[in-house]
Length: 453
Image (cartoon, rainbow, N blue to C red; front, side, top):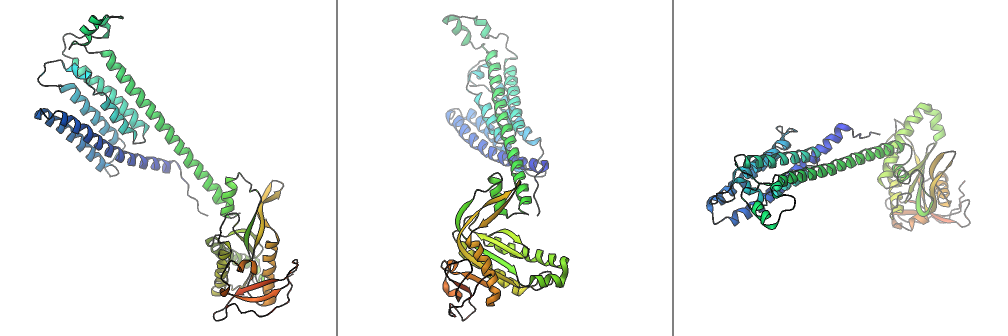
């Protein structure tokens, strides 16, 4: 059975794809933010066409950069450093505008006055957009660039000021007059505030990056856990039915006994002993492997579970352990397909004949075993009767025998009634059916006395 192993390179590829999808989403969000913020800035400055045009130009530049980045993602030109470059460009252009553009062209004030305007949150917008990338490194980079850009713009803005005031100039406990004189002075720069803002931006970047790293670590562990579960299931599924393997893994190794109505299909090869003597051990193993593989596919396709291979026989259950309200119909369809299959082809070059017994009733299913070994199996009169019906095929010259407990769930016209028969182990006789050939539907042949061994 082939297994799909997700190694480190594959995990890296998964995260890279997630980053690309996140970046595309971030660029779309960035464009929406530009439209909203740019629209507000332009609309509120409509009285100054020159200033409104400048803001419009800045928004257009940011939008163009976003489009370029969007088109690069996933192409041959995309490199690991490209996303870092565009984040740096965003912050660099924003910082350059803050450092050089006056609030009002008509007011002659130091450029440092712009830092009293609510412009610092724009850096958090860029940081939030970077978080969509699912990349801790990019978020940290955005934080570092933001700090460098903010403090660089501040340093550039105050570089030519001959006189500056700061918080220290007010003293520890200034009175109202002193506070107003310094704080509202055009020369007040508030260096400590700029440093505090930068620290806050970096701390937020570190927190978001930590969340991203934790999320990636959680996803990586989940991928590894799913891979381990899949590997165990694949290996275990070679020895027990896949449905049972999945249930056992979920239940930590054991399946509690359940009592439920189910349909049992018991299939056996006719004249197996003679066949073994004819083709020898090696040949019979090839025949059985080919036959079991084909039968297993049919039973699985009809939602059945093979609980046992007994020599040349197959015991399959429908409605345990996986529930299926249409279990009787599925079992009969599987039996019809198996019967048609063995009549239409050979197995490893050998023609075989199969006999099938089907019965519906209450069974007990669960893990049974000892000495540290467990086996999933089913017990009950229903299982025994399905096995006995398989044997009775030889006496009655049929290939498939179906109990009346199964037929009651189906359309009777699709079957031919064999008769009412005594079955060893049961106090009352039961009606038995087989598949009806074309033109001979549901024709009772009278009571026939037969006893299954």
